[in-house]
Length: 254
Ligand code: BV8
Image (spheres, rainbow, N blue to C red):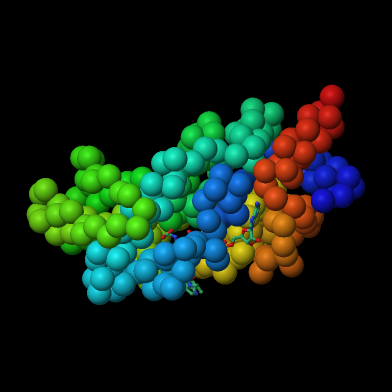
């Protein structure tokens, strides 16, 4: 990221009125949560996330898919928000209105203090049953690295429990879609953080914002499939760029 880029981005954020933040897996990389591109670490390296993160994959091998999520949930529950999450939460205190829309299922934006986060792909922290969607709020069996567990049965209807996330081939939650697309259409600027822009329809959000006249600022160590839509590309990790952007906005506001 360059000082000029930071200064331009700071002005766009300061002038935005409503700032929409749209984050992907890169937002949580510095919290130790692997991105989807590198989610297959170690014992999961031989599987394809797009195969495991589907209902068909779960029905074909409930033990494997349940265990993959148990492994990820364990990592999420032991993770802390990084300086990037904290900067986004602090940004909400200095701009007129800020709303976070995230593809992430880890809940780390809320842990950092962001309120009203729109989770377009659900949450790995929530569990429901496969056949009837009964929410499960009980205690889940503890997971230790390397073990495989069968999904517990729903106490209400007996169907296997599953993570309350949106799998490939599943519709996104209607209320989350309505909020996210409305924000993208109304915001003065969108801060696009840590997404490759490969998963749809979430990848459309910055394009909706741009079509509606908003400025788009991208934060990513690498160009993505959405960089073409960005007015400013702040190249670097979220945990470094976002605190620098916050500082630049505070300086500009003096
Ligand atoms: C649907 C929850 C209706 C589960 C996830 C067009 C329109 C609609 C649908 C489609 C379409 N084209 C194709 C589809 C189908 C499909 C899709 O998008 N397929 C892709 C693979 C082509 N979409 C769907 O199925 C969606 N459903 O539309 O329903 C329908 C139904 C059937 C057919 C048609 C339509 C549902 C998609 C949601 C899937 N669920 N998550 C779980 O977590 O297990 S997606 C999951 O992967 C994540 O949530 C996230 O969305 C995605 C990963 O993407 P990113 O977040 O961008 O992460 P990625 O690893 O790719 O990249 C990381 C980035 O971070 C990189 O750019 C990297 O450079 C950067 N980075 C790295 N370090 C840092 C960093 N950035 C900042 N700081 C750092 N330190």
